[in-house]
Image (cartoon, rainbow, N blue to C red; front, side, top):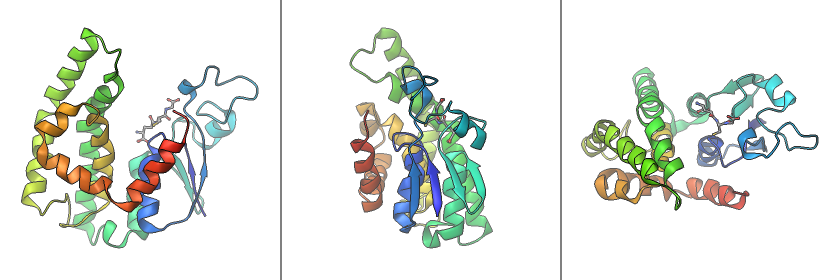
Length: 218
Ligand SMILES: N[C@@H](CCC(=O)N[C@@H](CS)C(=O)NCC(=O)O)C(=O)O
């Protein structure tokens, strides 16, 4: 059976959402981020990204990691793309061109959007000071071009990134844009993306993942 290493409050959420979309059974090993623990190396600390047994599996020391029939794979988007190719039906690529486009949108999300989206998510909190707010504003400005690209593409292609249907490309992009939506200005500024994101997050498979995520300790 597929094994997912990583708590749901991590990028493992992407893989878990996809597995629910596909009705793909998996075993989850709740490796937690070391930085969330007071002392990750203490005797009795929960399995975490600095635990020797996890580092033996994945020396990069980051979650998620999957084990699939002997294949050990890190990088969450490599995992979702792999599983969608293998089991995805309409969620995965129908041909090489769709495969390339799904990779393109996933890499665009990871490299062109995720760093600024994470800045917005991490700094949007009640105790944010003027410096934090300036960094959030800069991140929102830098996202102007990539989000215009995404919004215009959705409008011109039937409301989805690839193949005019919900695919792993939408899922990967939606999980990354979720971080930026921590700032309520984003939904007002990007109504086309907001409507698409709401559609993605209304899917039963997302909701199932989300409930599990909420049930984990913050
Ligand atoms: N690009 C990687 C990023 C992985 C990553 O940074 N994971 C975080 C949790 S979401 C992590 O494991 N941090 C733990 C640590 O730095 O110790 C991916 O998409 O899988």
